[in-house]
Image (cartoon, rainbow, N blue to C red; front, side, top):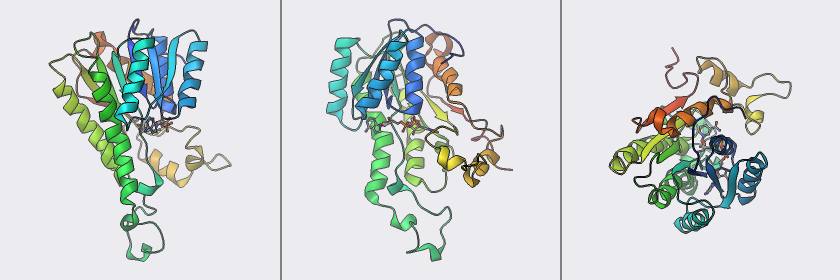
Amino acid sequence: MKLPFQIDLNDKVVVITGAGGLICSAFAEAMAMCGAKVALLDLNEEAAKKYADEIVAKGYKAKGYKCNVLEKDSCEAARAEILKDFGTCDILINGAGGNNPKATTDDEYFQPEHLNEMKTFFDLDPQGVSFVFNLNFMGTLIPTQVFALDMMNKKGASIINISSMNAYSPLTKIPAYSGAKSAISNFTQWLAVHFSKVGIRCNGIAPGFFSTQQNAKLLWNEDGTPTARTEKILAGTPMGRFGELEELIGSLLFLTCEEASGFVNGTVIPVDGAFAAYSGV
Ligand code: NAD
């Protein structure tokens, strides 16, 4: 990875949840390249360790840990391990999150003839909806309870949450994920206020649409032409293209750099080619 610019995170301990995933493994590498000791936490221990090993192989400091962000005991166990390995947390990145098919409708717009023909709003599984709400919201709140206790009045202490385009206006089909990410943007503001007297800043990043290996089948036909969904996304993105993962890194570096953003608190930066700003007309 090539950093857009360098910041100094020497001696800082960065804890990242969901770091076995696509975005947060890239965040982990970027933080490590700035000199931080990076703890990669994920339910998928193998993925967290694999990415950590890759970072270490490049000459930086990192270690992978198993952690379920929905269980306080699991977060506390990870905290104890990190304390032994690296010390107390300076920067917490709450990246674990995602959607689930059980909380997704098949149709964009409800029509009575859809009943019994496809999964409509009326068929959404309440447990699936709770799962998505919990993963995104409680999965941010619980690690913050565990790690922020160590961050009080530490120079450069900062929390970064990951919101989404859904927070600005909901995307069709995914009401639980949309509501949960909206809650994340709101919680980011709440935390910024709540921790303002103890020197912990809290900001967020809201990624727009990124074409990655994971969603390739949804976005591109086998012959390389765009799917209908891609056409819709690009029509809604005034810059007319997908983002590149590296394009999230500049906002991360800015928000975690005390010298650059020391008075920036309670914001969520959309990195979206103006998707959130566009009314469609
Ligand atoms: P990803 O699926 O690649 O990574 C998510 C990671 O979270 C996975 O490694 C998964 O194992 C982990 N995870 C799931 N449940 C967990 C739990 N209970 N405890 C600990 N870890 C758990 O997804 P990504 O695309 O890298 O997304 C990272 C964050 O960015 C998520 O919060 C996602 O909602 C958000 N986001 C992604 C996009 C996008 O286009 N990919 C856009 C907007 C927001």
